Image 1 (tube, rainbow, N blue to C red):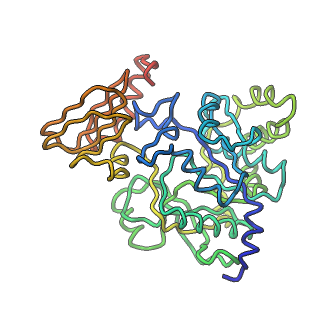
Image 2: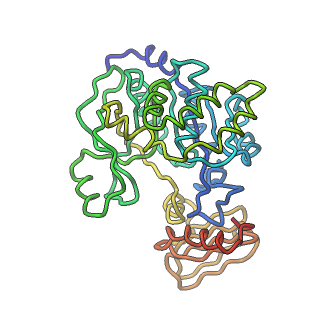
Image 3: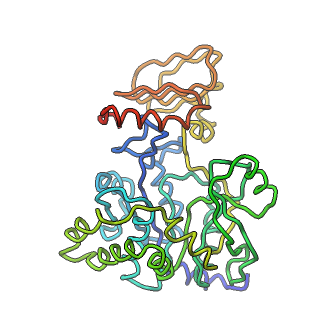
Length: 376
């Protein structure tokens, strides 16, 4: 490493962490809902919610420079989880607009504060370990971003997953402080099984975990080129931020903004322009996409072959395996069933299997169509 530790410290002084806390996590219904999305739950048995864990992972790198972008409805819950958050660093969306608007608004606000800021966007609902390896990767990403790149942290694949997008790595990107950086050739969509096996076997692909570290000016440059309407709206909101017309501007402009993902709005066009680098992350990463993930992440909570979670679960199992999440005092008895998922809440009961865990989203969509929004 050519760059001194002091100069890495100096770069981290420019680093501002951004935590987009959106999405309902419909595959975790009825535990995760619009009013209490998955980032507000402890899904790993660690004693802390996912958003608090995300904050604690980032704070040693960013200090108090942390911004959360979330829905208006989650204001109190987020402040309760991160009391250290300054009022100016809590950005409340009037309605969900996907990741480009959320991350783009953070970039626009931070750019007005200081055009030299390097921002890093990390979802509120991911589970990562070991934390030291994650921080080392982020430090490298900040150094690579300082060299003039949008940097993503890709996860070294452990198996040929068809559930994630992939990043194709190119030549080494030579910049002080980032010995593992590579140029990004392209982002690719979720592959079928045969293609996923080829990706992993090649050694040239990493999973796209949606982590982006970039100079705010470069992030906004690519947003302006690919999504000029979105960029113009976010710039107008950011110009009013912290003034007496902030709320009026937000309420007027936000509903008109295009809805798109940061991958399409920034990452893919920037990669095509040669402006993206990747740091391979050799830590474990899980986006807790369904109840099968909860079983995987909670081996310590196992009762024989059953993962049992909840404040005071009352579960009896015999010749059974799977996951039980209980938020009631009701006794749940499971006999002779394998790979079952039971989620028991006060007003909704889910029964499925770990093999069908991804299909829970369909039940949520059906309930929405029937008008049963009180349980969503």
